[in-house]
Amino acid sequence: MPKAASDLFAHQPSPRSDGRLLVRITYLELKPLDWTRRGLPPDLDVTLDWVEAPTVALYRELYDRVGRPWLWYERRLLSDDALAALLAAPGHELHIARHDGALVGYFELQGDEIVFFGLMLDYIGRRIGPWLLDRAIERAFTCESARVILNTNTLDHPKALDTYRKAGFQPVRSETRELQDPRVLWPEVYRWPPA
Image 1: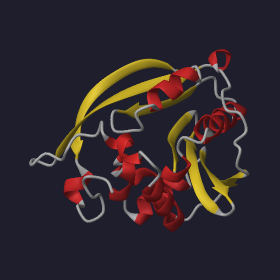
Image 2: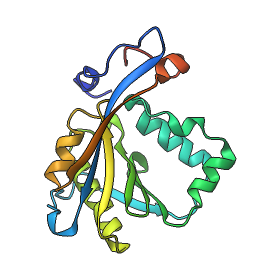
Image 3: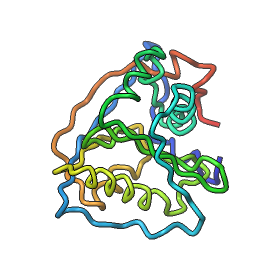
């Protein structure tokens, strides 16, 4: 884990004995004229590949490696058949960023939505996030979307909402939800506190 990475998780609450997790979700949208390109090319040689027919195994690996620190878990609940159908749905795209073959991060599109977007911990704070976000937005608008939508929540990177707003995304609504806490569901996988 990079230096001070534990600070990235200070905002995540400790697990509750009832196994519930309170989160605030903010839904945002971006229209083409509001987009502010912010991502300078990274100092690293980062390649971005569109995986046109991702396997369930590949997807599960990406989702776990990138999302586990942020307590992503809902796709873990899907059966292989359900996940395969989602990955094969019209309008679904998976784009993987790598540096010297190592996973940097990925983004996932479904129509006009950036469904998932994230980086591996070792690449956070290296100005790759804004660049990768620009690539996701660019791709979504290339698909002739009139807007791009996404959401973030209070468990995500503490600067996620600010990053999206600086790119031009505007909040359209928010809600508070109580979810299952993956740290209680799978304590051997989602260790607390993060190492």
